[in-house]
Amino acid sequence: MPKLKANDTVVLGVSRDSPAANAAFAKQIGVTFPLLSDMNARVMERYGILQKTSIKGVPFEWARRTTFVIDKEGIIRHIQQGNTAINPNDAVAVCLDLNRGQKKSK
Image (cartoon, rainbow, N blue to C red):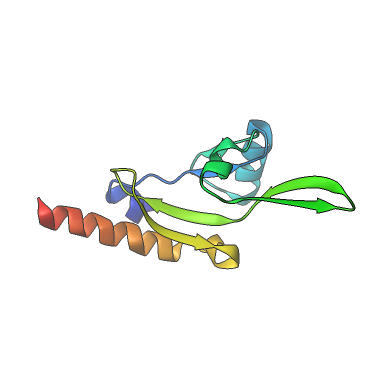
Protein backbone atom coordinates (compact mmCIF):
# COMPACT_ATOMS: atom_id res chain seq x y z
CA MET A 1 0.00 0.00 0.00
CA PRO A 2 2.86 2.49 0.48
CA LYS A 3 3.52 2.36 -3.29
CA LEU A 4 -0.07 3.37 -3.97
CA LYS A 5 -0.08 6.16 -1.40
CA ALA A 6 3.15 7.56 -2.86
CA ASN A 7 1.54 7.56 -6.31
CA ASP A 8 -1.58 9.55 -5.33
CA THR A 9 -3.84 6.48 -5.36
CA VAL A 10 -6.74 5.62 -3.07
CA VAL A 11 -7.90 2.09 -2.21
CA LEU A 12 -11.47 1.40 -1.11
CA GLY A 13 -13.34 -1.82 -0.45
CA VAL A 14 -17.09 -2.19 -0.94
CA SER A 15 -19.20 -4.88 0.67
CA ARG A 16 -22.87 -5.63 1.26
CA ASP A 17 -22.03 -6.08 4.93
CA SER A 18 -22.94 -3.50 7.56
CA PRO A 19 -20.39 -0.87 8.63
CA ALA A 20 -19.92 -2.73 11.92
CA ALA A 21 -19.32 -6.05 10.13
CA ASN A 22 -16.86 -4.35 7.74
CA ALA A 23 -14.97 -2.82 10.68
CA ALA A 24 -14.73 -6.20 12.42
CA PHE A 25 -13.57 -7.89 9.20
CA ALA A 26 -10.97 -5.18 8.54
CA LYS A 27 -9.62 -5.57 12.06
CA GLN A 28 -9.56 -9.37 11.75
CA ILE A 29 -7.49 -9.38 8.55
CA GLY A 30 -5.50 -6.18 9.16
CA VAL A 31 -6.97 -4.09 6.34
CA THR A 32 -5.88 -0.46 6.58
CA PHE A 33 -8.01 1.01 3.77
CA PRO A 34 -11.69 1.95 4.17
CA LEU A 35 -14.33 -0.75 3.63
CA LEU A 36 -17.56 0.89 2.50
CA SER A 37 -20.97 -0.59 3.12
CA ASP A 38 -23.35 -1.04 0.16
CA MET A 39 -26.13 -2.82 2.02
CA ASN A 40 -28.75 -1.83 -0.58
CA ALA A 41 -26.41 -3.06 -3.38
CA ARG A 42 -26.88 0.06 -5.52
CA VAL A 43 -23.17 0.43 -6.24
CA MET A 44 -22.76 -3.25 -7.01
CA GLU A 45 -25.74 -3.22 -9.34
CA ARG A 46 -24.44 -0.15 -11.20
CA TYR A 47 -21.03 -1.78 -11.69
CA GLY A 48 -22.65 -4.97 -12.94
CA ILE A 49 -21.29 -7.28 -10.27
CA LEU A 50 -24.51 -8.10 -8.44
CA GLN A 51 -25.48 -11.67 -9.22
CA LYS A 52 -29.07 -12.81 -8.79
CA THR A 53 -30.01 -16.43 -8.33
CA SER A 54 -32.43 -18.55 -6.38
CA ILE A 55 -31.72 -21.29 -3.90
CA LYS A 56 -34.60 -23.73 -3.55
CA GLY A 57 -36.93 -21.10 -4.99
CA VAL A 58 -35.76 -18.34 -2.64
CA PRO A 59 -34.31 -15.29 -4.45
CA PHE A 60 -30.75 -14.52 -3.43
CA GLU A 61 -28.25 -11.82 -4.44
CA TRP A 62 -24.50 -11.85 -4.01
CA ALA A 63 -21.65 -9.70 -5.21
CA ARG A 64 -19.07 -11.14 -7.53
CA ARG A 65 -15.57 -10.50 -6.15
CA THR A 66 -14.19 -7.79 -8.41
CA THR A 67 -11.30 -5.33 -8.45
CA PHE A 68 -11.69 -2.10 -10.44
CA VAL A 69 -8.98 0.44 -11.16
CA ILE A 70 -10.66 3.78 -11.86
CA ASP A 71 -8.61 6.77 -12.95
CA LYS A 72 -9.00 10.35 -11.74
CA GLU A 73 -11.45 11.10 -14.55
CA GLY A 74 -13.69 8.24 -13.40
CA ILE A 75 -12.79 5.93 -16.30
CA ILE A 76 -12.49 2.23 -15.46
CA ARG A 77 -8.99 1.21 -16.62
CA HIS A 78 -8.83 -2.34 -15.30
CA ILE A 79 -11.29 -5.02 -14.14
CA GLN A 80 -10.36 -8.26 -12.47
CA GLN A 81 -13.00 -10.77 -11.33
CA GLY A 82 -13.15 -14.04 -9.47
CA ASN A 83 -10.38 -15.62 -7.43
CA THR A 84 -7.66 -13.48 -9.01
CA ALA A 85 -9.37 -10.32 -7.74
CA ILE A 86 -8.23 -11.25 -4.24
CA ASN A 87 -4.57 -10.59 -5.08
CA PRO A 88 -4.05 -6.81 -5.49
CA ASN A 89 -0.75 -7.06 -7.41
CA ASP A 90 -2.28 -6.57 -10.88
CA ALA A 91 -4.30 -3.57 -9.70
CA VAL A 92 -1.21 -2.05 -8.07
CA ALA A 93 0.75 -2.46 -11.32
CA VAL A 94 -2.07 -0.78 -13.31
CA CYS A 95 -2.21 2.12 -10.83
CA LEU A 96 1.54 2.63 -11.02
CA ASP A 97 1.47 2.53 -14.84
CA LEU A 98 -1.39 5.03 -14.96
CA ASN A 99 0.45 7.37 -12.64
CA ARG A 100 3.67 7.11 -14.69
CA GLY A 101 1.68 7.98 -17.81
CA GLN A 102 0.12 11.02 -16.14
CA LYS A 103 3.50 12.28 -14.97
CA LYS A 104 4.96 11.95 -18.49
CA SER A 105 2.11 13.92 -20.09
CA LYS A 106 2.53 16.90 -17.72
